[in-house]
Image: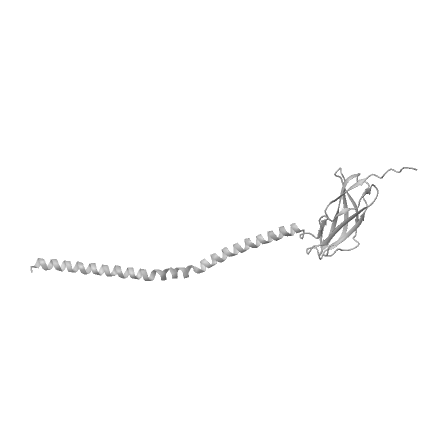
Length: 207
């Protein structure tokens, strides 16, 4: 074998060794990547988990705060709908003025009321009857202290009220303006307006 042939085969062998070495390194790296990649993801996840947990906790707090706000709003709307956001609750449809009512005569107002849970500890200080006639003029009756306090049980109340002389005959409405002391705080409430007909005194016919 000539010198040139030996040199050629030596070159080929050397290149083959290099190729084999490169191939082996590439295979080793590929195997290493395949093996290490899942652990890498876990390591990154572990490394980032505190921040992710904080982010999740913040989102949960925001969701909880929004949910609590919605619950408070629903509770407030429910209280308004049922009248429990007031000091007293008046039974609907049971309030009326005994008729007929003539000019100069007192009226008898019948209502059924109870204290709400909010107003259970409140004390009624005084009440004022407010009259509005057909001319839309409002007149206040006498401010009086209550004879008794109502409780959380529904109570039928019958009140005799003087009609102010300036109230004109015709359709009149009346409601009670109520002043309470609720743990040192003045709170005002009122009953629903009740309508009645204020009539002129009948003419007397002499015998």
